[in-house]
Length: 263
Image 1 (cartoon, rainbow, N blue to C red):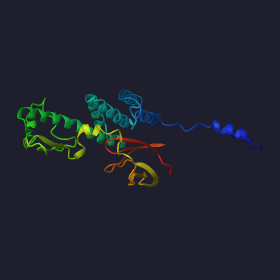
Image 2 (cartoon, rainbow, N blue to C red):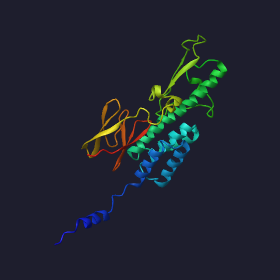
Image 3 (tube, rainbow, N blue to C red):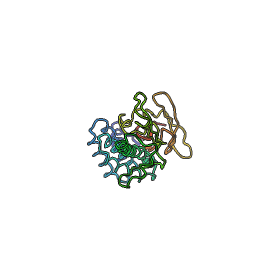
Image 4 (cartoon, rainbow, N blue to C red):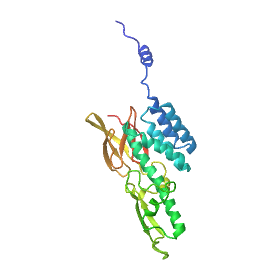
């Protein structure tokens, strides 16, 4: 039998069909790249377009999270709340959805805290001091009553305080936190960070599977290493999605799109 020439072999190889890239992964990669350079409005529109194109994709939660953050940054809190509520309500069908629901709870809690702060300010405007407890807020009419718990159902941690330097009364300021978010409860402080600030984990190695689940080692900028399996979530790192060429991480507040390391 006569073997084909080298030129013929090249033609044969080129004629083989290429592995098809998953269209939702490719579209999300484009959204991820664009969200770092486009305006808030452009990212929000592109995120909404992703959901329209791929309504059944597990990556919808990621697109919603990006869109919601850019709505928050642009100051459109009502639209952000609506999108986060959808994100919270539809979580659980897959790891990305479940981690997206938790992400939504965190940002919704910060938005809810703003309502509590506004109600406290109304009390201060009338009494010239903040209340000893949040009980007066619970007695407000339903249309004026702010959320009395965070998004995990825990009561707010509230404590009136005096200014450290100005001696003008014991209840001139206050501490208001979610038990889950602690010092990171304030919306304005959270939005002062750029997207993903401090979320520096990178995949460094693929490890042997455990129970049929892929396992990877990650390392952050400080050198801390964490091992996470597919679909698992720890205190500050979760592996939300594992694709053919990408993986998606969550630290609770942000997503991170990373190249999938080779075995």
